[in-house]
Length: 415
Image (cartoon, rainbow, N blue to C red):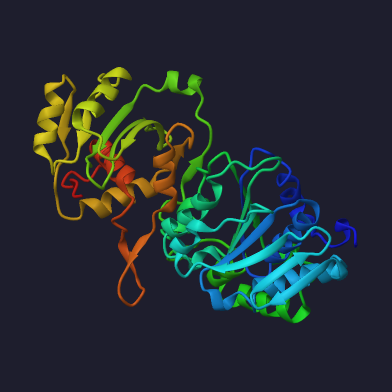
């Protein structure tokens, strides 16, 4: 067997180290093309099969792509590691078996994710899963069904490892970017981002093509080869500053703004508390109350419990009954004004600030929505001057909170 140090790219040493950390269940490898993501995961899974008496399942969305992609990638890893004599390879059905013990790597299509609900192995339980090209899954639910079906039983003497590899989609609102492309990542998840520059096995012709793209189409280069979710090509809020906001800072905040965007059945309710540094034109997200099917009574109780009745709240005026109800609980609240073009103007005002400081631990939903939002596009793919009207509740709430700070007197707020 060839020493791993001779074949594993230096840029993936952290990935191999993370795989030993019992805190992690999910190992996400994302990035640009030709960055060796799949190569590295394949090498890792071959080693897992040799070292541990468990089964590995490899998924792609469409079953008929398995034999020419991940199966061949794992064969290549076997050759790279110089362990050809240790494995038996079958094409029908696809299976790679470690001869000495008998545990295998098996392959499944996720054309119908419900079919994976009953997948079990009696002798060598499933411990490792690899989802290659996860962006082929249309929804997060398709992925969840498979993961939940396998994680349901406790493993003896081991832990589950779930590997995911993909090139980030261009659109920031794609479910994959919203889940693994933000500053709000679950503590059981390790994220590795790579690009072609660390892959010293790349051919000179490939590098020549990449260099040409970099010079002639920089945005395409950023997306395809650096693995950046560039959205429409223009970042709506280039002034975002994700960092820790300390308790000492909050004690000094004395220019408070508060807003509410209503929601209940499907859309979430969100209350936001902000500080505005007028001199430096910086706003700080201090706290949020966020929830689906959160009644006005429960939301009001939370506001009162946190002693946020010290400042007027500006709320979406589309629900006057909700405003009246919250006011009955002793909370100072007023409706946002309405006016043509107010949404676009409010979004522009936020984007023109020197900085929008957000602490993902204090306000995770605000962080996620501001980071993921993108501009609307028309049917021809051309950008509009308005942000997408989905997953933008914290942005709407912020517009309401700062309406009196926006100098355009005629501007008010539409949902």
